[in-house]
Length: 340
Ligand SMILES: [Zn+2]
Figure 1 (cartoon, rainbow, N blue to C red):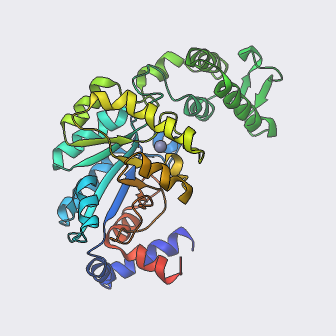
Figure 2: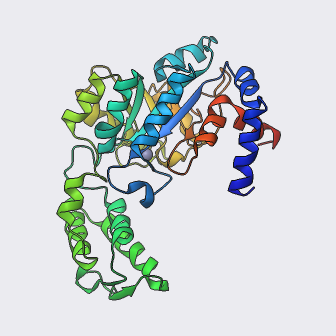
């Protein structure tokens, strides 16, 4: 379906009363919303699926209030599903990763509408004064006004001058990313970003100071936690291998860094990048984790496995009508119709 046809079908369905009927039909299921970052500059143009503009986010939260959705904490959702007493129109709001903008742009909106939320924090870049490296590389490639980059001074063998649109342009970005990821220390990665800034005509310090690609620090985390945000697990390095020992280590490191800062221990989990398999479930049970959320679409019933709780990823890619359709359950109805 093209975007226009899709939206037309949704608008028609809404005005024919099908959204209303879907909301009634799916009233006893939990909807979980998922956000990542909130634009401070132009991040929603950089990765539309990862960021959302603050005014749109405000509109989305206002909609929940206006339409009397029952916004509850993840823990309440877990208890209600476990005891088979899910309340009507329950919604859980989750945010992944812990971008600085969660604190600067989302927290004020949650406070304004008095909404509980859950923040899954990954800990490697937490409280570090530097952008997430891979996003930093991508952003510099995206945001540069130059069309030719001289990459010869990056200290990476084989890299020379590349031109936007040429086949080696994308390859150069990948080479820089892989080289930096293989570095032992974050200082080396920062140095590489600094050099890439020079090559692409941008100031690394400016990017770092804007904090658009940085995570929150300790004080900001604690302020989030003190203002109705539950802080939960998302691994240390944003990776969750199926090897039990490696996976347990990712959770242990995540816990060790974040738990001491919180009023209550973390007990819920979010799969990094939404990559999950049933092979993870035993590991998660061993870690006493109550729920694990994915990036798959779907509403939650008491029968949904606790380590496969699906969510709806809201972002700059999603229009208001798609958002409304997902929340009322009409999109779920369409998914069932298509047999998915
Ligand atoms: Zn994540």
